[in-house]
Amino acid sequence: MKWVSKLAGLPDDAAARIPRITIIGQSQVAVYNANKLERFTDRDVQIQLAESTLRITGKSLEVKELLPDEVVIKGKITGVSMKGKHLG
Image 1 (spheres, rainbow, N blue to C red):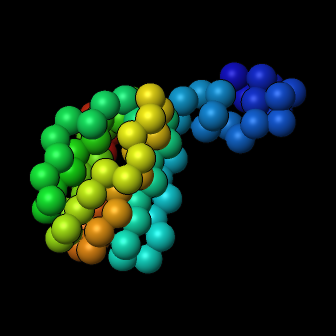
Image 2: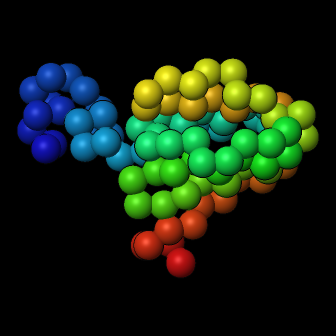
């Protein structure tokens, strides 16, 4: 798959559907190549990734963008953790 991404000028994660998580300060988490928004409250968000689950905790959490492969969460972020097959 690496050769496909290089040929197309894409990052490796885009071609292989590897999740990319961007945290901006304590106010935003953007998740790319997400599979499913599993749970959402104003204090807890769980997002299913390819081989793990991402949990975001905080206060006044809001889903600002919900696209087929992308989820953007805004609010007062107090924790981000992953749990899955290869992560324990």
